[in-house]
Image (cartoon, rainbow, N blue to C red; front, side, top):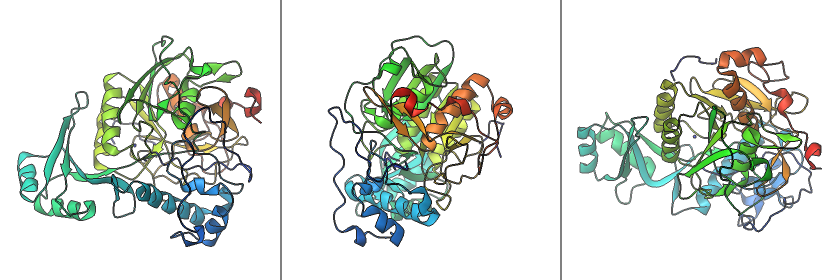
Length: 445
């Protein structure tokens, strides 16, 4: 149920849940990096993959489904028809692959979710708990206090020769009062676009009072964003353009000819938590991004990312909500058999799923603890970095449409009045149904 009180993000793995042509080609790459190298070894030997997934991944190019990238392309036709167990297999393979490709920086938690290697996070620890932790071999490597949210986050290096799973058990044993967690990674909750290097979008306009924030990858320059008021800040190094971030931004404030975002004229604040690095997007970076967006007085924050529950992210979400800021998050695209994704599943966060052009809920959409609204998230176009547009699919792209309407409407209660019936699990209904840009209207076949 939607929470209206003030109570209670993936790294960039770029799971691509677009159902495209079986012979889908890479989208135009205008000087960007080459696609990620194929997974080593026979696909038939991949762990946890059932027959349906193994057969799917034997098709040319399909292995991109589990490649850790911010800028992938679509899967062969019929992905959603594989069913929940196969989508869950793809999720497991994807999470294993991002860890395998980044062994020096990533580890896993007890559920196989990627986390930063050798690091734990403590939320507002008391002095005695820190003392007990250091006596047990932990070491403080960063101590950060958010200026706006007032949260203190302490990064602890784990004892030598100890993995993060055993380290968290040890920390909770020696300092039982400490609130500690892994530094989880969060993923973009939708198909990404073509690999791209290019200029980061800069502000060329002036917002008209409304301020919307987004936590995502960086936003590239694009003609539809040329007159938008955009401010970007990097939280994993300098802000770097990504296909996913550019698409989301265009759906918020883009405007050019037949293409129009749902909140044109608003000022857009972009918190890049990836820096074009698929092994970034961690809980600590998301917390820092939330603090910045709150300080910049964003009224609504779009989070087209999904990941596991995390104590620090939850604490930051509560602090943001206490300041009257609305948060809108995607439910993810790993199917109904996957565990509920966060921050969409936190109380008070507006959880968004996606529908196709006929108003039908996408079968690959996740199943959160609560579901509030749906919006178009398939059979639609969004901006491609640099120039042009591409078809997009996923709950990532429905979320900015709901965030835009919430920014304009002013409250979740008013969105309920706008919502229209849909087919399947659509929460309180479909919002912004007329906001879908037909790909043919902008020259996309």
